[in-house]
Every structure is written in C-alpha cells, then in structure tokens.
Image (cartoon, rainbow over all chains, first blue to last red):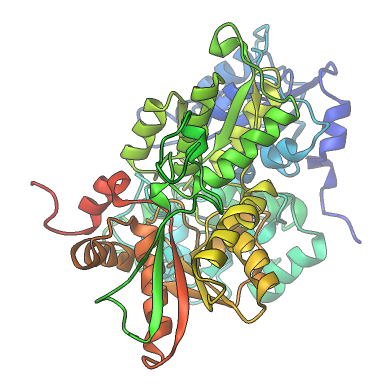
Length: 283
Length: 326
C-alpha cells in the first residue's frame, strides 16, 4: 500500500500511547464543547473548546493571532513542541484546530488517526478525568497564512465560472447538498437558503473514514476524490461544509493525505454563502 | 411470589417471564385482515414501564453475579452503572439500581423527550444530556455512547457500563423471556413478529427463539425514515452503532415515514384504547402494510408495543397539530 503524501502529520494510537507525557510532545483534545474532555481525556492532554476558544467571540471569524497565542501559550505549549490533536466527532474540531495551527505557522502539528472514538475503543489506551497541570508559555504565532483559507468572494468567483471541474468540494450530507434540509436536525447555525454552490462535487466528509474513525487508505481516497469526484490535482481546490469544521477534515485529507498543492478551507461555508443576497445556488 | 393473586414481596418479582408474561391484546377495528389474528404485546405493563425491563434486569443480574457492582457508604463512593440510553433502558436500569442501592448515570441524546429525562432523574439517575446530532453521517460513533464509555474508562472505580449496544444479554433476555412468552401465549401458532430496531436486541432475540421453534415464522422490522424524530428507534443508516444487529435474522425491513408513528398512535388510543408510544405506532403501520397486501390472509401476528404514550406527550404536541394548548 502506498503511503500518504505527508504521513508525518498523522500519528496512530500506539505511537500516541508510547509518547504520553514525553517532553516536547503535547496532546490537545478539541471538542465541540469540553464535556467529553472533562469526563475523560488522554493523560496530560489539555482541552480546547471549539465554540468558545477557537473562534472570535464577537465577530464571526477565527480567533485573532493574539488570542491564539494566549490560548496556546496558556495551555503550556511552546513553539517547538510537537502538538498532537484529537477530538470528538471523528476529529472534525481537531482538524479545524489543525488548520488553525497551520494557519498561524506552528511547525509540528499532527492529528491522532481515529480521534477520540478510536482511543475509547482501545482497551489498553488510558483515559483520565484528572486535570492537567500546565505552566503557561510565551507562545508566538506567525501572521495568518491566508493561502489556506477561502473567502466568500473566492467562492462566488468559482461559482460564476464555467470552468469545470470547479474543484469545489461540498462535504455536507446528501440532504444538505440537495437542499432538502438547510442544516442537520437540531442545529442552530443555519442559512437562509438550502442547496449548494454551483459546480460543487458532493463528497460527504465521512466517506474519507473507516468505521473505526481512521482515514481510508491512499488508493481509496484517490478513487473517491480524483476519480469519482473528478477533482483536478493541478487546480486550486476549496472544501466547504456548513460552518467550516467538517470541511477542515476534508481539507486535511486533500492537502496532507492526497498531497494536492493548493487546498483551501472555506470556513464561512454554507451558513455564509447560503445567506448572501444574489449569489448563484443550485439545488 | 404469587402471579395468580398478584401479591409480591418485591417489585423485582413482577419482572416478565414465561410464568408472568406481559399481556397480549387483539387488534379489532384497526386490523385490515379480519381472518388474521393481530396482537399487541403491551410491554409498558412491565414493572418499570417498558420492554427494556427485560434486558436491564438481565444485565444488572450479570454485573452483580460477576461482582462488578458495589454499594458504597454513599452512592457516590460505590461502583454504579453508566449507560448511554435513549431513555427506556436508562429508566429500567436506574429504577433497579436505586432499589438495589447502586448509583446510576444515564447519558442521553438531546432528542430524548423531556419526560424521559425527568423520569430518569426521578428514578435517581444522574443525567448527562449530549448533543450527538451533529451530522447524520455514517462512520461516527454516537456522542452519548462515547461519553458513557469515557466515564467507564476514566472512572473505573465508580462506573461499569453494561452497554446495551454490544451486550449479548440484551438479545439473550428475549430468548429467555419474550420468545417463550409469545410461543406459549399463541400456543405455538405465531406466524409473524413485528418489531422495531433500536439496539436490535428484541429483533435478534425473538428471531433466534422463534425461528428455532419454527423457521417459517417471519420477523418483520420497521424503521423510521431518515432524519426521523422517533426516540429509541434507528434508521438503517444509524444501525452501525449497535453491534447486535444482523440483517440476516430479519425477513423484511419496512421503512416508514416517521410522522406516521404519531398519526397511528392517535388512532390506536382512540380506536383500540391502546395508549401505545410512537415506536408502537410505527410497528402497527408496518403490520398494517403487510396485512393490506392480502386482506384475506390468515395467520397470527404479534406486535411488540415497547412502551406507552405517557412519556411522549411533548413529542406528540410537536408532531400532532391541535394537541397542545397554544
């Protein structure tokens, strides 16, 4: 089996277990809220709350460079640390954090393959409810690398272009893509209209993972994205979902496992696009 | 214990079994094939209110016999139960655990109706409500199962998780009790069993027992349409969370628009006097569809009516216009 384009950004549970509490290696659990972390986490891990700590709490935006420095430094992480991210919902929020760490220039950040669900399934993998003691550091982030991020105008331009494939990947569920629902049941973040960006290929995020939450092998991912979804690896690619977290997961797959050169995450996603007056929508 | 006079020394003696079966009531006006005997098995008449009394009692007995549960000086200092539940298993477990002096923590999805969440607390459980409807995609463990597993893993001294989604006793309970009850109640004449799928324990247990007696007996399962709001049930796309489900044991699976669950509940209440819950409404609709195929057919069918409508008042108000007071 051939290996992923950047295999070094993915660690397996065995590796993680062997490296718990090693100096220079820091585990961070990223959940939609920190309930799961509080009940039990990998010993030594700190917990980040996607809702309150990874987004600006006033504007709709990612956390600022200063806030990111405060968060990461406050978690006792240094610039030279290897950061291992994992979390609930099959690593959606961990992948979002991975995208943020890359955006702010952290050198060595990796995802735990399979996330929290695989960790829980391993009988010999430890979990603790004990608080992790941290010593704050003076963490310094780089300026945001905007080349990893797609903005509304980029997506509108793609939508209006007749060039195909548009290399736009919609990672939401089929019912969201078709416009049957605007958001999964019970979700508060929604849009004014249902449907998808014209030209987008529908590849629900979950098709990239196995039942145990780990990523599928390279050949299957190639088949899925390059053959079935017909993405052109030579063109810029944009992944979007509803609020930008599921699409971070697919962004990770496209950029680091398949090795596509120019992949952006559209964090505004459908809640932004589907609410804008006059933009083209397909159903 | 005396099932004839129904005088008991403890509530546990009322648990169902071949000598104390839950009642079966024949469907009258709502049966489209009069020559076919269609029965509803009323599981809400079990002592803690649902079909889940069967699996819960089996699982607790097993944990006790293996020394996995411990009474503490206070409940918190012992070793109790943590379980992911859409309500009924949790209520049965909580009631039994409380009566036996063990602690119980229930981890429930947010979509579980308020009535069940409150009942869990009334029964003495600590309740964690989890939003696990982030994205209805396959390949993801449900949040409530993950949280319950986290408690069991991070706080081993305080919790053990029976895990109805993987525990073979959830099937064995029906092989030991429900199957033999139905066999005896129908005098071996049963031709069809109608069930719903949640953990799939009932479907698998009934299939194993009844087909062992007579392989021609048809096991027919209903499932609500995708994106449904029928607590406790699963669409096929959600069934990966249970390790017990084996499609080969089922003869037919009918997918039914979930709103019909609520419509049929009203009819069952108003026409047959059966105060059945939404999953029973869906099962009835499945049976009705099978009988409509040939209204002259003969046979004996048993529908598993898992619980009653009392726990779903808020769901009924949400889905049936005109029931609320607004």
